[in-house]
Image 1: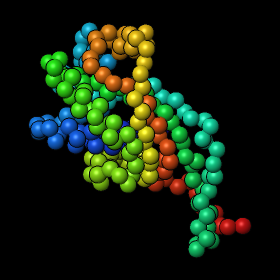
Image 2: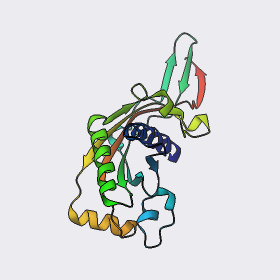
Image 3: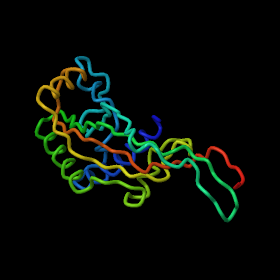
Image 4: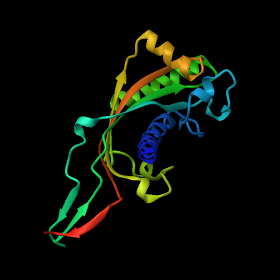
Length: 197
């Protein structure tokens, strides 16, 4: 769901922002946003300038991992909880430095690259607790309870780069593209219960 993707990327954005903040400055350094609004011929989002912007440019469901048990036994209470099976999704995440000054953009992008090189796996156990709550979906049922996110650098061809930026508005910024695999997703939402037969 969109909320699942939103919460996952918000957690990553919070972690990246925490890393970028160690280099100084008080305003947010990383944001979620549509880079197309910045790259278009008539930019509509001036607040997204001078940031490291995370944008989703493609989503794919990983069908091979979808089959699994949809129930969880609770032997102590003699109940079975029926839960939605975990969903496995791959996202193409564009990390763009939208800084007005080109050298600032390159510096910010290099800091982001270093971050993802050393922090390419995010789980509910290895992120700062505040990253789980800052900017999280308001409805508790939209929040991820458990997750594993894996980032891998993706090297598109020059033709793919041109196509992508053409689709996003034509104006290219310093960027890196990542494949983000979302695994082991669990939510707080439980569908229904029944007695053990």
